[in-house]
Image (cartoon, rainbow, N blue to C red; front, side, top):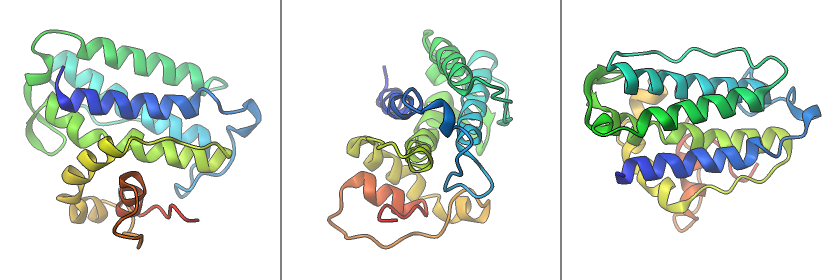
Amino acid sequence: MSRELRNYTKALYGFDAVIQRVPAEAWDADSPCDGWCARDVVAHAAGVMNAIETMARTGENALPQMPDTGDDPVGLWNSSRDALLEALDHPGVLGRLGNYWFGESTINDILAFSVWDPLGHAWDLGRATGLEPHGSDAVAEASMAVIGANADMLRGMNLMGDPVEVADDAPAYTRFLALTGRDPNA
């Protein structure tokens, strides 16, 4: 297992720990993501996982599509998570080279870049539903190294907001949230 897959899996299961605890009545609560409620955050995350799964299985580029969560956002999450992890659990898949989201890269590179999605959205869902996320500082450090180098591009694509000021000695997860435009003190 690569470091990137370990980090991605840790981020997925950190998000999973929030999703599994969301009370049924909280799925329509507004999230910090403009225009999205809690169930939309999960639908987006499932769409990203489904796209990565498709790339891992076929080698073809796949753009994330937001599936309908219906009345079962947890079920959608569980099936998308399990399908992705199964697709990644095959010899050679992490090294599969393709012309993916940002040009030629491997599935391993896609995971290194994409770890910021479940890491950040765990916080978004937690804020929406009153649950405490527990992001890994080690995973946050690894993610900041990748997305920090691509921050201008991500902001230009409206995928993250302007950075928020936090103390330089704040925990890595707090600094990660701030880098992505989330205010960890709000």
